[in-house]
Length: 174
Image (cartoon, rainbow, N blue to C red; front, side):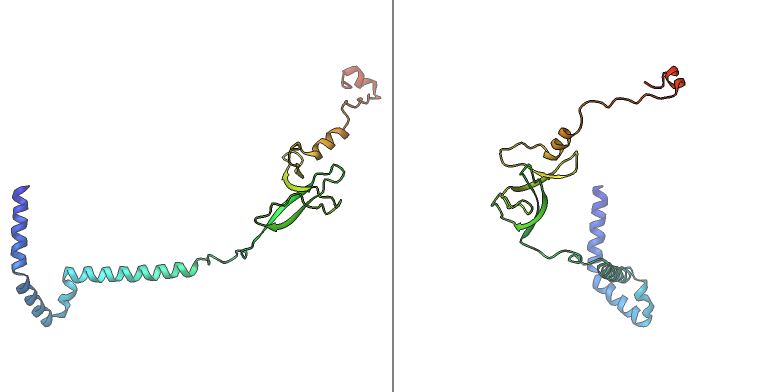
């Protein structure tokens, strides 16, 4: 390996010493035959590099023009937030949306339906899919689900017996 490195250094020094003479000879040859320009490795590499840069620029411009704008389809910036609110009054339980400033903290709001100041930020009930609000310090259960469970009968309805005696005989009426 060391011998090879020494040989490469010697070749490099020799090429560096003869560089000016070689370049003058190459220029003289090109004047006689201009086609030699395209046969030299350096010129071909420069041409391919320039072609690559031009192609990169063209392809990037095409993709930039085809891509949608970053601001296209966006809504204008606003200082308001849309909030879901619901009334905590057990007789009302009205849900609505309201727009308030982003730094809004003046709870409770006035309910649109009953007019009392009992509207708080609402959450979606996973069971009945209705919006409800819980007053601070109050229960966080859905009042609509509670209302439905209290109105439903707790016992099973009596099953109607079949009038057909064959059904009673087979045990199908159970």
